[in-house]
Length: 125
Image (cartoon, rainbow, N blue to C red; front, side, top):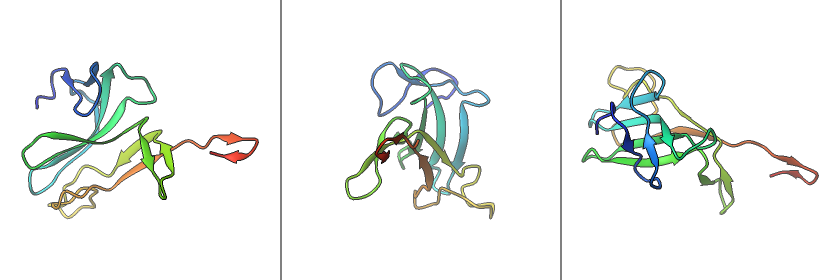
């Protein structure tokens, strides 16, 4: 998939695009030993600052799969759902260079999804 053109963001509604590659549009990425790519990318189009970042991984055929995006609901256990406010992962290495990695050759990805605490008169939600 070319990263220098505007492309529909897989797994998202019409009108959401992967931002053309430029410095800062792909914030973190890693390539594992099976040539799978994991990338934390910025998106453009029908998005805003609360849902403009997404984490994708290519499958073994090279197709991009949406893993998580800002604004998604994430099950934090026992069916309790929370909205993701930011995403991050440790990219930069697929492990072949001996450095720490967040994406391994089995296609397993470790990432951080955070949420904002909302304080109310009855505690946090």
